[in-house]
Image (cartoon, rainbow, N blue to C red; front, top):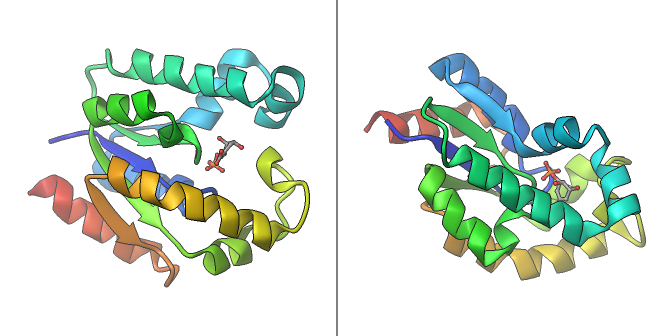
Length: 169
Ligand code: S3P
């Protein structure tokens, strides 16, 4: 069995899918945002504000390095920007099976329109930001992924069942 690495844009369902997968597999669930917040003792929004996005991206790279050395089976739920660095996309492949939870800009907007926690979505018109970022990011997510699963129908149990079939193969 392989580790599972969930990638995708903010609001694509990585955290929720990760939690259901943990229940079904008993594997350790790690959420890179949560782990970085613990390590830094700061919220992601404060890291962005005080140290900038680039510093946060470095923290993500360092975190992936640590994970590559772990022995136990894990489910990794990643921050949405992690694969945008090519070296991170390469590192993820070493950690496990990379699954892209894909959703359209409209779906994501519907899920995140009232969000106040994600620093990259707090300025300007949310739907426009999401649409433009997704256009840039989607090809990167697609090429970083071993498997792509669409989540627009919001049926996360079905998404989890698809993943369970893959990891039991
Ligand atoms: C980011 C996604 C966030 C978090 C940070 C930056 C991004 O994680 O890492 O706000 O660049 O897409 P989620 O995808 O878990 O929201």
